[in-house]
Length: 351
Image 1: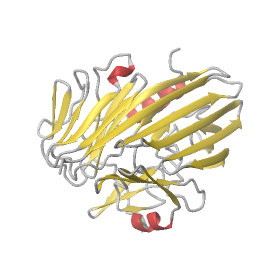
Image 2: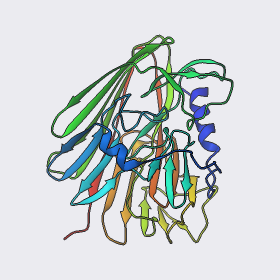
Image 3: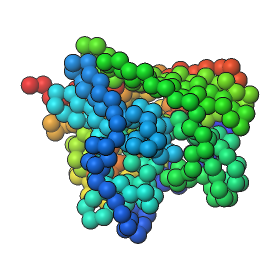
Image 4: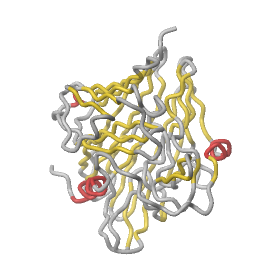
């Protein structure tokens, strides 16, 4: 089945930012901001470990939660993940502010808004039932949201949550499972997400199960933003795929080199420098959802393997973080179910 307007609506929204190099839109300095460290201290979280990896996973809490935005799935936000003392995930911004759209800079600090102030391998779904008119629509992983006007959908915009559904959390020593049940506007679903540390291996596995319990077709897409903090400035970062790469609007040759099946960062990214561009070359099987991001300076990195075909592939980075963003498609008739997973294998420099 071909993607419906909901999917392409998000693609269009993302496409407006997909230029090889661009400055962050100018915003007035926020009147107030708070250090992200204060948020980390006050927000409730869950600690899991398999003896190799230790991770902190944010609890969902409408009052004190680390992330209560309406862009990303609120379940499974990793605020820290360490292997052998090296931290791979954590906030890529220094401060937060409720008035910032996406993020901005104040001096050398990045100040993130409520819908982008997130960390780790987080997912974003395309909206359901968004009409561009005042009314309600659904963002899977978030809930029923209010569209107050006729503006186009903007995933940086903070929408009022009218119904967050029924949420439960199940915790073990090595895993956390989040479940959201939602029924509204003729749509209904049960979404279960589990983050699990594999016993005896430096691996994190994220599994999703989405079941359509409503009367309407669920036609959407989901991508993982993969906010990876591997190297400050990204100089020396190398990304390798199992297919030959091409980019219609490649970034400057002095910053990135695309050669064969790899991308290499050639110099440090400057403060306020930003890249976001699309890659092609992947096929229609899950075998191409397999990439490795290496630190060629200090050693180590992460390999990410998905079990679904890629439908779109974007690269994003600023000097604090590097992101490989693969999209997958979801089409569920009433009563149908889809499962998908990602396996993250971490490594550090051998002693």
